[in-house]
Structures are given as structure tokens and as C-alpha cells.
Length: 265
Image (cartoon, rainbow, N blue to C red):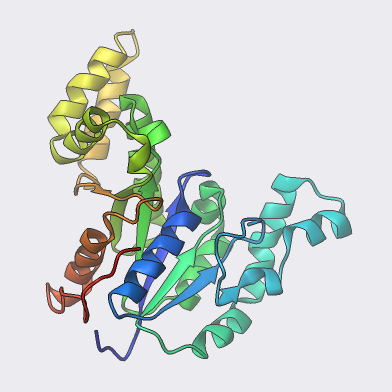
């Protein structure tokens, strides 16, 4: 792909949804397909050694340092870190400008509520994003396999979309942990909302079912039922479909084919 501006993709989702793994796996897939990606870590508390980011917010803000210096607990330190990162955003942007790759992949903080609700997060995204920016929200199968959990993830995804007003895509992560019938059921819910509606009625046969189904209908009208893209970072599968979905968002189906055939990961 040839573009004056890279495609920036923010990976968001609940803690444990597999954001870091997805960033790593998609970066590897892009490389195998002939594209270069700049990897950015925006999580000051990320202790995983799975990712070797090109731009790492921990060079400016570290969660452990904040806890020690200000006597904060993990939650308080995360809030403080989010605001401090916003103050460093132009330094982060300068570091990012030194790379000239097709894609920028951003691993967001593990606590999705910090990413979604802090005004500092919106300031960071606004500063780092160009016209070719999107958010991909990861559905953790540990939650998504139950109707109530699936709807909870839809709510979170809708909140993120409302807050940032960027194009959205939705990944069902860690599909290697699902049985085939579970995978098909979850994908069916994303494609046919009425199937999810019937299952939530079956699961919540309680006095509050009316409220739940009314909430479901409200979510349905917001438009997150665009289909889930199943991926497995462990197996390296599903990322070509994700690439194509991102291309449809920005290029109207142009340059859908990788510039060279993808190799096995």
C-alpha cells in the first residue's frame, strides 16, 4: 500500500481480551504480507515481554514509578498515568514521526474504562490520529460465549465508538480457545441480532427480562452488529480478513491484496 499517511489502528478491549497478543500477531502478519508497521505501547503498566514496541510510553511514564513516588495503589496510579501521558503526547508524537511505515498499531491500556472515559485518552487519540485512523474492539470469548456477556461487550464497544467517533471494527479474539459450535454461535449472534435476542430471553427468564431486552433493542439501533472477525493470535489466523476489513474502511476495497503473498507465521 502506498499512502502519504499511515493507517493507525488502536486495539481496545477488556483486560485479558488479548490486545497485546493481537498487536504482535497482526504486526507479524503485515510483515509477512510485505507491509511495515510501527508498534506503539500506550499501557504504562504493561509488564508483558511479548511485545517489543517501537514507541513505548514507559519511556516517559511508568506505573511502578508513580506508585512508589506518590504512594498510589494500582488504580490510582493508572488514573494519574493517563493524565501524565496526555502531557507527554507531543513527545510521543515526535518519536512516532521518526518512523515512516504503512501502519501504526497501538496497544491501549488494559483497563478499557480508562481508555474510554478519561478525557486525557481522547486528547491522546486526537493528537496521534490522522484521517486514516480506526479502533478495533476485541471481544474476549471468555465473556462473549454467554449472551449477557456478549451484550455487555456490545455496550462497551458502543461506548468506545461514541467517545472517539472513529471507524470501528470488531474482533473475536482467542478463537483457538472456543469449541467449533461455540464459535459459530457467537458469530451467528453478530450477524443475526434476533438469534441473540432469543438467547438472552432464554438466559434471563427473570422479572428484569423486559429491561434487558429493551436495552438490547437500544444497542441494536446503535449499529455495532457489523459482524465479528474471528482471529487467533496463537495460531496466526484471521488477520487477512481483518486487513481486508480495514482496507474497506479507508480505501473502498482498493489494494485488498497484500503486496506479496503472506508467509506462515
